[in-house]
Length: 344
Image (cartoon, rainbow, N blue to C red):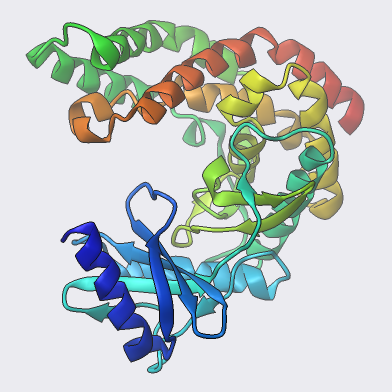
């Protein structure tokens, strides 16, 4: 479907299913898997329209939207989702499936932009989020072995499979060649990563979390958090992992030389908002973040799984992730000393 016919289809769905009369429909921010649009209605309001790809599991997408609604009911800044006239969270027509939410005005994403009071604002919001989601019907928090949060054995299998695929058709240059070399270096570094992770607590908490709390899904307005978007279906993962993923985004780590101090501010605010998570787990945030990045195959795998997705932005992000692994490991002791003083 062309961009123009996509826009026309959205313009037809909105009045039919949502009683929204659009005056303008434009393409919105680029999504990882979805096509996004922004519609202005006859009253001047704006709506964010997400169109799901063919083959998307719509029941899972509904669960993700419901999780966001649960968080919103708990006071977390999540855009309100508009139901269809039949009460559904997703409308389907002529091969297109969409959801509609209030558009969040005058914001920017958290990509590389944590500084000043934003560190504490993000930590406080994520703390409140996790405290709210700990009460979700999907189940209470529980403890799992730390190796389940950062699984070096599984990382070895993924990296070996990726390198085998590269071996089938060796890349000559560019990002694919860099991705192959980086995957090989990560595989060689796994014994050191395993040693680094041995210092984690024996067990870590897992609970219902956002699930995809990367920097593009956290919107800032000035020094405050304006919205959390794009939840995933309820699933138990480590809140330490999720906190580290957002406050130690590779772009932030590389752009902010004082990130250990900023991290301490974020964790202090998180702990005040959600005192249930033990201090020893909060101390592990930078170690889990470093281990998680070191065990990851994304976006290296895109070079063989989805070459069309390898845009200049994705290439830059891949290089930033690798540089951030080095930075986090080199300054891990410094970061943990700052956190130890804070938490003890």
